[in-house]
Each structure stands twice: as C-alpha cells, then as structure tokens.
Length: 265
Image 1: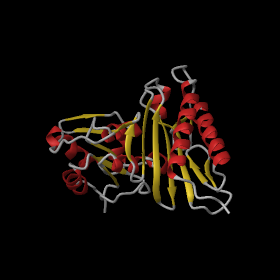
Image 2: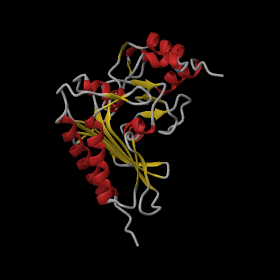
Image 3: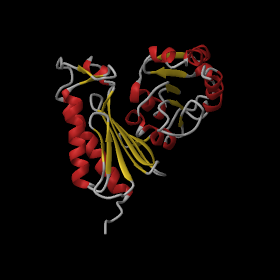
C-alpha cells in the first residue's frame, strides 16, 4: 500500500529538481549551442533533452507511482494509477536560451487529475525561483509574492510572447485593443512574463496558443499570488491551449476587451 505524499515533501522535491535541471541548462547557456528544429518548427537543444531527462530520472526514482508529461519525451505512465502527474518543460523559452537571453525557465507542476497541487518556475540565469502550493501562497526566492495593486488599464504593463501568433490565431483585434488600452507593452514573454505578473512587475500577460507544459505551474502561481490565469473566455485552466493572466484587479476590463476581440465563429 502506497503512502500518500505530503505537500511539503512534494514541494521540497520539486524545488530541488528544478534547481538541478537549471544547473544543467547553465552548462550550455551562452556557449553558442546549436539548435535543431522540431516538426512544429520550434527549436530544441541538447540542453532541453538533458534537463528533461534529469527531471524524469529524479521523479521516477522518488515517485515511481506518478505519471509524467514532458515537452521533449511525451507521456510516461506511473507504476500505478495514483492520479498524480508531473508536467515538465525543461526549458521554457528555448528561443531566448539559444540567443543567450536570460528570460528562460524550468517549469515543473504536479496535478492530481486536473487539480493543480503545486507549481515551480525556476529561471536559472537569473537565479529566480517562484513557486506555489495549494492554499500555501506564492513565493519568490523565499519571500511572499503578490500581484500589483494597479487598478486601471491605462496604468498597466501588457506583456506577450510572440507578436506574430495573434494574427495566426485570429486574436489580433483583441490584442490591439489591449495595446490601445494599456500604459506600455513589452515582449518579456514565455513563462517569465507570467512570473512578472505574479510578482507585481507587470499586470497583464497573454498568449493565443500554449502547450500544456508551457502552462503547467502558471495557474497555481498566479492564483496564489492574488491574480488570475484563465483561457480567453475567462475559465481558470491550464488545459485550454491558450492563456490570459492578470493581477486580478484588471481581470474584468481585460476580459471585456479579450472577449470582444475573439474573431472566431
């Protein structure tokens, strides 16, 4: 009979595992590492593969009953039907990584069924660790993290990952409305952008397309920091293939603009 793991023990494990994977990525960072192109034209490097393999090895050794889903090596069932699944992105922001830009992260999340239990984002080149557990709050390098108190879109910082994807996924009008409504805009994107919202350094971050491993820890981190992480219709989820994050105070006006600008039938 397996023992139900405690949340503190799971979190301690996840923090150490993300740190170890991050150390692997730093061994390749700013070295001129060559990248391959995957079938979807996204880049992948030996650092992605080594970091994910490290995470898989650590999880399998510590929690053999748990399943895994990772960007590079797909789904791996657990030894039993525990309901626990780890979601892994060994390098979120590979384009930043191969360009020598430090805004890339190791993402690790644990869900039971579709219920998030914990989320960790580690940005190795910045040595920033942001994490959250259910009901335990969000922390940034050991300090409690909170979203900003900005309550007007006219004062808000808007972030996005890739400007081209909004037109590709029929979301350009919504994005333009947000651009027009906000104070200033930057492409400090990928998981780093969501981390900026969670830690009060930006107010809105959105992507018209995201894989599950891109979203894994982000809903939990944003919610525990006082913000929101939803699909473009306002439903809290990491399973929609898209995302909008806010500081909470701006959720309603952001959703009004986003829903009005979703050019889909």
